[in-house]
Length: 478
Image (cartoon, rainbow, N blue to C red; front, side, top):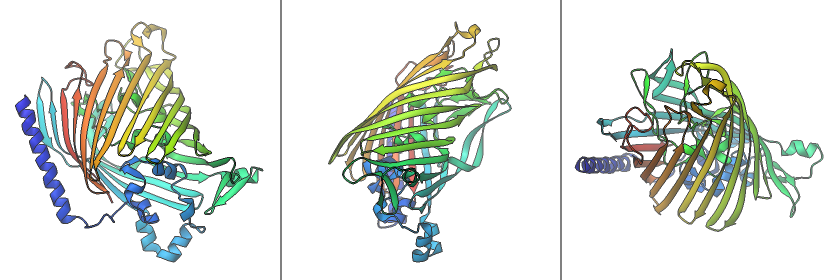
C-alpha cells in the first residue's frame, strides 16, 4: 500500500511539473492577465489576495465597501469609463473567467482503490463592475460538466449551466442616512457617515440578490485555499460525501430539504449563514475601522433564516493582524424531519435550526491561521423521534496557510465533526488535509492535495468509507 501511494505521489508531482511547464510555454510573460477588478483598478491580484481566492486585509475592506476604492472611484461611474476607455474595453474589464477542479485523482480504501484522470469540473464567468460610486454588481454564470442533481428520488450526474453561487448588487446607504440627518463625509464620490477625526462608519451597505454573506466572517467559507472535494454518487445513491470544512456543514444525518421532491439534506451541505450563495439581503457596516456589524436574512429550502454577526479587528499593525467573529443564526422551517414510520421519507414536521459560533484569524507576515467552531441545534422534532435522533451537533475547522515562496503556498486543514441526526446512521468525522499550491503567475495555480480520514473505516458510511484521497488540480482565473 505504501509503495503504491509513493508511486502515485511521484506521478502526481510529475504531472504538476509538466502542466506548469506547458503553462510557462503557452502563457503570458508577465502577470498582467488578471481578473476584472484588478484590471479596472490597475492592480495585481495579490493586492487583494494573500493568494487567490483567500482575501487579505485590503481585500476584505474592498469587498465590504462594495468592490470600491473611494480614492479611485469615478464620480460618473460606468458612464465615465465608457467615455474614457470605450465600450469594448469597459466590457472586457467587467468580465473574468475562472476554471477550477481536479486533473488527477487517487482514492484509497480497504474496499477498493481508484485512480482516474478528470477535466476541471467548474467553469465560472464573472460579471463584476461598479456602476456608480455607491452601486456595484457581481454576477456569476457557472458551468459544471459533472454536476450532481437529485430528481425522482435518485442522484445522478449531468452537465449544468446557469446562474452561479452569487448574483447581487451592493449599494452604499450612507447618503440615505445623511438625508435623515446623520453627519456625513464625502470620499471619492462616496458618502461616509461620521466626522473627520471622530466617529466614522463605512456603509451601511445593502447586498441583495443571491448572496454569500460569510465573506465578512473571520473564516470565509468560500474563500479557502483548500477547496471542497466533489460529492460522489453511484446507482442513484450517495457513495461518498465531499471533504468540506465541517464547522460550517449541516452536520445532521437523516434530514430532508423538502417534502415534495424528498431530497435529503446531506451532512456536508453548507447551510444557513455559511451557504455558498442563497437568495436574500445582507446589511453590514464597519464602525471606526474596528467593528464590522452584519444582519440579514436568506431563503433556505422551504423556509428562511436570519442572522446577526460581528467581526472585531483587534489588531492591525503592519504585517500583524488579528480579528475574531461571533455569529447567531436562526432558521425557521429550513429542514424536514424524517417520517417517524419510515426514516427514508420526509415527514410532516418542518424543523427550526439554531446556529451559533465563533471564528478567529491571525496573520503574521507570510503565515495565515484561521478557524471556527460552530454549534447547531434543531427544534420542533416529533416526539416519536426523540429517542432515536440527536438534535445537537458541532463542527470544528482549523486551517493554516504559509507562503514559503512568492509562488508556493503550503496549506493544512483539520476538520472535526461531532454529528447529529438519526443515531443508527450518524458518524463522527476527523479529516486532515495537506496541500501544496504552485502559482506560475498570480492568477494561475496548480495544486497537489491529500486528505486523510483519521477515523476508522466504515464501509456503509459515505462519510468514512475511504482512507486517503489525493488530487492534482488547477485553479485559473483570467
